[in-house]
Every structure is written in structure tokens, then in C-alpha cells.
Amino acid sequence: MDNAEAVPVSEADMRGLALEQSPVGAGATEAARRELSECSVRDIVRAEATERLQAAAQLTAPAHADRVARLQAEAAVLLRFLDGHGTP
Image 1: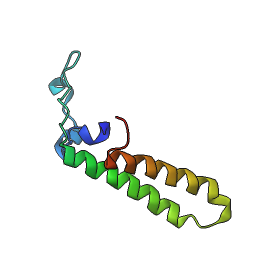
Image 2: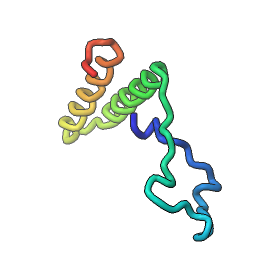
Image 3: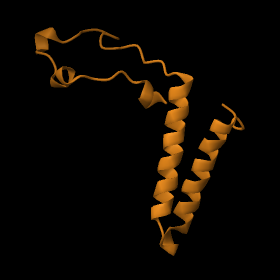
Image 4: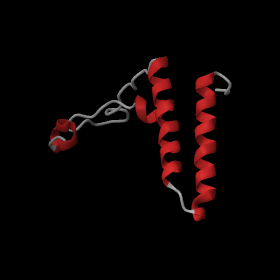
């Protein structure tokens, strides 16, 4: 969730400023984080679970059985949060 709350950086910000234009001092470059709606959080959690299940489905070799089980378990935990059975 922390990454999703990060403030988007524009291409102009990526180029940087001249040294004399650079912010100075503690906290000079800090920005308030975005607030996510409950719907956005659910979408992010659902996407993370789906990503894990898709990765598990692609690992078909027996040598990957442990990794598949871990991905499926992680997805199950995430999906429990969506069902309201997880704890925050």
C-alpha cells in the first residue's frame, strides 16, 4: 500500500533542477502521500492476489511445487482480507 500512496513524479521532476534551484533543508522535498479509497485498496489487494495465482499457474514443473504452494498461500491470505476474514 505504501507504494500506491506515493505521489506520482512527473517527467520534469525526474530531470532535476540546477544546483542553485534545488530545495535545501530537512523535509524540503517531502510531499504528502496520496490517500487511497477503500475501493482502491481492494483493487490493489485483488490485483496482488491475481498476480500470484497467475504466476503459480505458469510454474508447471514439479521442481516448482514449493514455490507454487507459497504463491497460492499468499493469494489465499490476500483474498481473505477481501472477504472480511483477515485481520488488519
